[in-house]
Length: 245
Image (tube, rainbow, N blue to C red; front, side, top):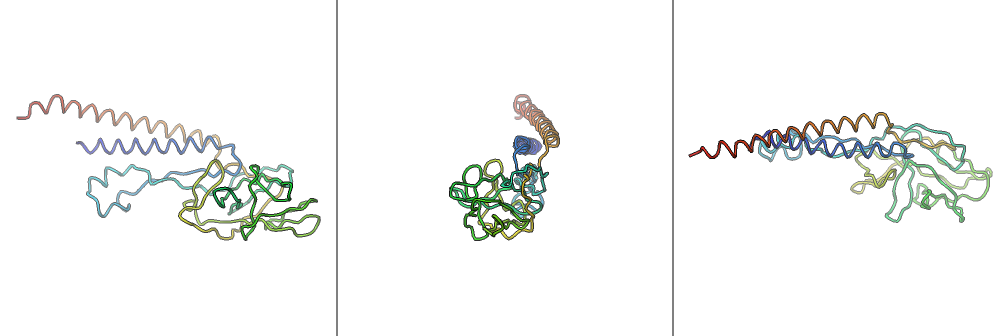
């Protein structure tokens, strides 16, 4: 079968996958602390299968996506005036305790539970550097840029800011929370916490819309290419093969 058919089909598959990524980014453009996902392609020459595969197999798979990585770029900070709203400027994530284990987020819309635990909107405890819940007594709360929490002038605890080397070490779970990949361990990050503010998604609506349209058009082009090759194959099968003696 013509290798062009495989190349066109792999390109169609890749653009369809990229279209899903772009749609997810646009859908979360208004989600606080969301990190956009960026697709990347597997290398046909230097990829993991390049040395032990046949040449035609390697070339035909050139358009297959290698996957997607989180874009760790900064989102805009928006003042809210709420002392329990926190935003990170720079590297790092808040660590939270969920039913699935420790997860990481840039969404700092926190609240104080009845027992004094600092939690997410879903009631999940916010953790300190020892993976213990941060307790906040009643009173005037001040959060420093380093995460230190003071209540009525007395130190009550310190919110952890956990960093990862790159976006490939995290995988998305829902809109704005992330899980480590393959046991990746966080390290202390240098991000500064801003009290009374929230970080917006790092995917803007205009850029997300343009990317979605681009991926859609490229997917349509690949679909047409597949159709053209398919028609040529049908013609060969119906007209040329019967004449072979």
